[in-house]
Image (cartoon, rainbow, N blue to C red; front, side, top):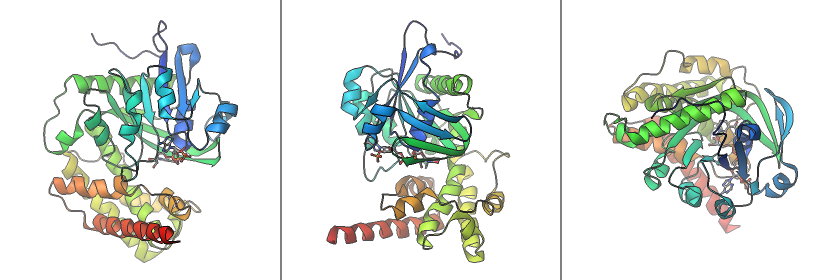
Length: 355
Ligand SMILES: NC(=O)c1ccc[n+]([C@@H]2O[C@H](COP(=O)([O-])OP(=O)(O)OC[C@H]3O[C@@H](n4cnc5c(N)ncnc54)[C@H](OP(=O)(O)O)[C@@H]3O)[C@@H](O)[C@H]2O)c1
């Protein structure tokens, strides 16, 4: 029987949510999903900031909700300790998506029971595929957020602006990408229902006003739209020698390059997904114009590069090139960015190894 989502969880049975990846995005969205009076209990699995979080909780400095401290239901130092603590209704993955470095689907496996819903809030495309392959029967919710947040010191997260999050059930988009019709089977229905449920909690209990729940292809459309921005600005900021967003769009040659990358994705995505971008999504031209005002902001990939951290190259460049190619669509500018950035990272890592 189909039940409409309720504002609170089951009063008879607690809902337990665990976030894997207690960074900027994880801490912010976890703090808006912890509602013990509604029987929703949210915990964190932390790594480098475990000591601070277990002692003091998370300090949130937010543009939208003011400043507050979030004390999670529990904080765990790793997956095995969270797995042995209890069963999890939701496992929300908010690590950086680095499939070339770590198989996070394998990482979370001990947390996932037969009814566990996996929620992914990460940039890029194709992030869901390893989870669907490992957990063929579990509901998966795919999430894309537009937020500007950072962990300014261990345990302190600042949200500068925006809280926009799109959620959608993920059945088996790999099959859809290969041209199959969506089956709308049990798995799809279960996943859609969980997307509605968690979106409703964030909206009604967490106070996030711009949560949107999309259908499966609709959500993928949002992912590819966000990719227009990320795949143009992120790698280019590194490869052009380390320049911020506004700085790049004010350089005519770089502006032409950014426009061309965005337009490449803009025209390819409807051919890949079989659905045009909705009319309300910003066009490449609009994105360039609004970026002129975004002075001082640096794309996350540039921050990662400057700090010597791995970059989300595969989900932002490699996966789109491969997914498009499988549909007979070439993305030549994206392929160049992918080849150059991947090589730059490898060369730097080799040099580090030689030190
Ligand atoms: N920040 C934003 O404004 C923003 C906006 C839109 C989308 N996104 C996307 O959201 C995702 C998360 O980004 P973020 O900015 O929140 O990144 P982040 O601040 O670097 O947080 C990632 C967290 O995951 C943890 N982690 C990684 N591997 C782990 C493991 N094996 N076990 C436990 N913890 C682990 C890291 O711990 P350590 O400290 O130990 O490394 C870190 O705390 C990315 O896909 C990003 O592109 C971010």
